Image (cartoon, rainbow, N blue to C red):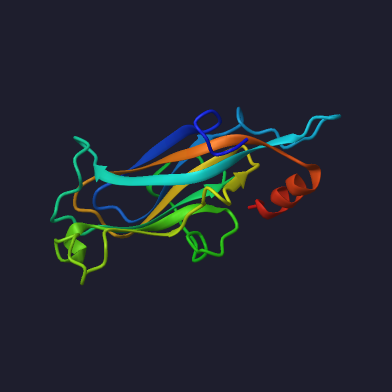
Length: 191
């Protein structure tokens, strides 16, 4: 399969970031219909190639951008095979390596800074940008998922004044994998 209009399709998920609540939450996306990590007879195993991930953080009541006064700050990531399920803000704890660029399960990740946390002007080049992505797959080298789920995980460092929704959209395609590639991916995507 290739990155083209015939093979690429979209999957998406989102989670609600609860106002005035710290720590982590998650939303799990079931991928079992797209992945078959077992090669049978002459058929190869199947993985899900993720070429791009598009992120959004918006108001939780009307899909508007978050308010300019919002000072909430959080890390976020899309983790292959994490198996965390759906958890409200504060229901789980993130570790120091959850959102690390060295985390082998990290498909995409970054940080969100509310406009109020960056001086109220997201276009001010002297301030930190509201959304900072630091891990992204690429069209040339997609992240290939061989586990049956992927989890959107976020961790609130500074509580949000109002609720927000964090969502992501994946550009992906099913791809065939030879046995050695499949085995290597299964080893690296172990929690």
